[in-house]
Length: 209
Image (tube, rainbow, N blue to C red; front, top):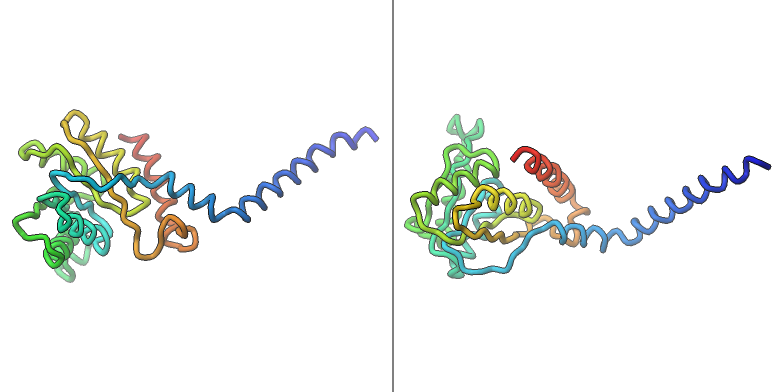
């Protein structure tokens, strides 16, 4: 008889945990959608002095930058001289910077409005430093960064930190990848990997920089 009271608490705790897991499963769509929407930074489109295209996703980011340029949101577009991969080093494929330049050019951004910055950048931190270096000799009060959903929070955090004191406002515009959005990212392997990686990277950036 003395063991029954001790057994009741674990049983109730297990039952409660099972109910919580069941509720999470039943309501996973609104919960995961809400989590993504809370994570993603997507500030209203506004006029800026320059649009910044970060390295990575050349199939996505420069297209949106070109759309913003054509919409009159900024007169210039910065893109990154990204570190060459092995194939580009051996001349077997175009560099990412060149791909980005060609995408911008073919989507309505004239050569005279484009500026390549950085020297073999390999991270968002490198890119923030490259933009800061460009700002030392160029006048800009507002920059508009276009990047994919999961990357927006880390990009805004590091750019605002590195440009602190430069008198520049940083705005971030989120672009949904072709494969998924905030309402279905967990249904796609790429979406799960992207959000998972960005959360880890954000913690790493917070600790390192």
